[in-house]
Length: 632
Image (cartoon, rainbow, N blue to C red; front, side, top):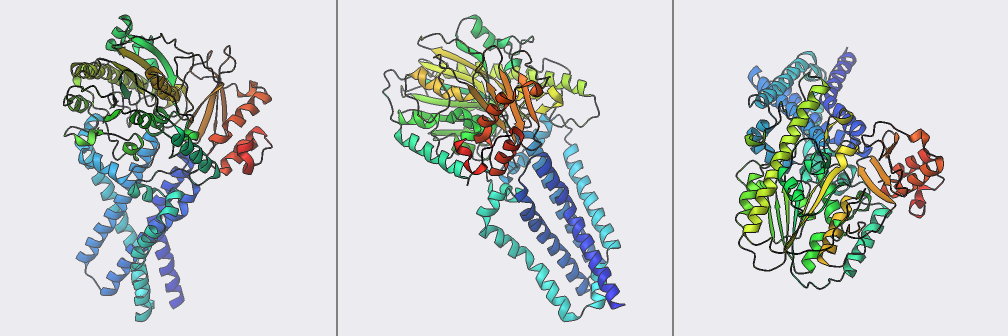
């Protein structure tokens, strides 16, 4: 009889532990299978969540042993339900972050939006009551689940009936002491766990998961970039010329009327074209479909697979030439994965978290710029980041011209995909109208303070945006054309120079070299971009978003190929970039095997791990050994 009761208690204990781990299992399935998180994150995350689960079970056992009353048990169940609800909400926030910008949300980033939750729900077009009601609903469900589990899984009472006092106390001490031991172990081995991509650790430490950070290829890249940075020698500046870089978040090139879009979304920029003030206006390709690597590509003139911590940036180059560096950035760059450090150094740093306004309100950028003193003649580099075109950017009523419009970040209603395409197009185009107006006001403010007396102005985007194409909305999820399509506009103030002819295809990595060439300054040897003032041609342009890596083959101007592979599913795509710009027809079966192998070889350095390189080899039929990939 005792053995039967012990087995019943053990079964109930395991069942309740599995109930606690069930959300973790579902989350990890989405994290690894859908968002391509590393398999190495599974074990440490289950250990972390499981240790806290066992501690809760141990506390339940302690209360049973102490003979606590119904009130104490109810309070425990309320606390237990709160912990489960917190876990579920955390998982939801992480998955939203992965779906929205491709990265695990950090606690510092969560705190910013938690403090501005009313502004956030207003931007999302959600009634204020929805968020607290949703949180309350999650908590109520968690509490009821705990009560049901405690009713039908009475293992503490069963255990108390059959176990000796000494045995019960030993188990109790073991399970309650498991939490601090687990937390201490996480702290002691935080470097190892960070490299596994365990999401909770990434959230708490704000860590950046870089799968190839310890690979031989990454070390070679870092060594090469460090040598190039050390070898760079500044040139001479004959005439001080300011550099103004304006980056629109999710600024998609083909929706600007400047480039022939049917709606007049950028009247101010259009007027610059009509007046002949634009030195360059063309659409280019971002290196990825998210802010972090997009801004890195601009600053470092590198494709994603070439990134390293030692890369010399445009800001560093200009600082070596005596430039004052000012960063005025709408949005949260302080807490967004160290972007404030990536974009440095800076003599002046300001972002949306330093304003009393909503963090993504571009009016705050204008207000901060209005505080600048008059230009003193010292060459200055200014980088502005605007959020009006981003799905979380605050839209002013004055720019809600296209209707009906709805924020497409949630898409919770049961409306058809066609309806959402219409609503999202209107919503996005309204954001472009506001972006255009903000740029006009920003340049007028700088001009009044003398910063445009002799200056070059660059207007571009960090990545594009999907608004229903291929049934996608947002960015950071794929490498289709709209998610990589950004504009590049150049204006000259106070000087004249050679006319720049737009190219059929150019890349985000070309922005920094174009700026330096405009200033007459030498380029670092390690950069991958080329100045658009000259006619230097390249064979390939690379792009990458998560496990999707690809290239544009520019060798035959009559037929430009866009080729990419999904390393997770091993699906392969090839599109005719000229005849099929919407990427409707996958022509991979029509591509000669020789050409396909050439593309695969070009993509080898872009894969992040030896395992992924082996996957590429198997798909391409390449005989190169993974351990010798860099010699292929």
